[in-house]
Length: 417
Ligand code: ARG
Image (cartoon, rainbow, N blue to C red; front, side):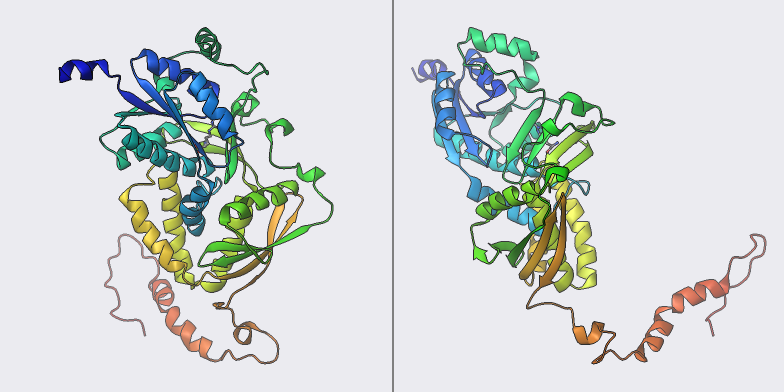
């Protein structure tokens, strides 16, 4: 009997549901494949009304719909480590979309376990990075779960999707669809498609949603002061605030000053080059401020070595390896560098630029008595001569030996004089 009942129970699939066309169509598509769909919507700071989305998921045929506000979790557990590692992919992209994927995957896995589901699903196509991030995060956390990506399989055009939605009585917004594909969360806004697909063409003003054009920005600068504690932003203009609220405020203030626009031709994991436009006002301000504070409190070799770690760290976030052991190992290194990254940094926002104008820390390595060229100089300049003599020894030896004609084999001198 158990076999029969089991074969009658439909397997469950937990779907990452945004409320957009792709994931709404995915619900009846998965149902028709014989599965019960449980929808999960995670608020990471995108403009979403969770209650509306929940009702839409149910109206589209989900057997259950979960919604959750994960903005604080996103800021504290994902953005904070990325900021401490100064994470910028290819030196340009603060990884906003990339950082949210492992968090969403973690929620999918939690719900899948609670619901006894054997599948999770997402709305990504087969051409992007996000499929890699969802699939790898899920499989790292729950190797027993199988991942389904309907949009990788169904080969429907957009018009066919709309027709499919209508025939399944799924509400399709009447508004004319934007030519752009947009992804938003606390850490930034990503825009692709439309005219942006020609990397030679300047992005039209209409692609921007969070930032004012620098030419339209206020004529007078705005100053913001960020207080860091061990590499984490703890205060904004002297007021203590949860990190996700600081990010929201900075997106608004910096965006108003035209700060945070990024135009980049990016190397995707799947080998494609793609033109991306980002708006990351808070990220640009905070990454600049954090680096300035590190420059004040970290020794030169730590800064230098950390650059290598940062580059690797950024790449693994991009590549979907958040839950892989390398990230934990690099985090341990980064954390130990952040012990003294405490202090305040002031940033001047003006017509698209964010410039650090001041920094201070109880751990500052800057000693005026050493740096000054005025009275009170404690640096013993006469000691530099001996230092340079020894430091320059390899360079002198190299030059003294000189280049030799290839035919002539000589014995190297044992020691320079
Ligand atoms: N290229 C970026 C990344 O891989 C952003 C992708 C954003 N997705 C979108 N639908 N616009 O992280």
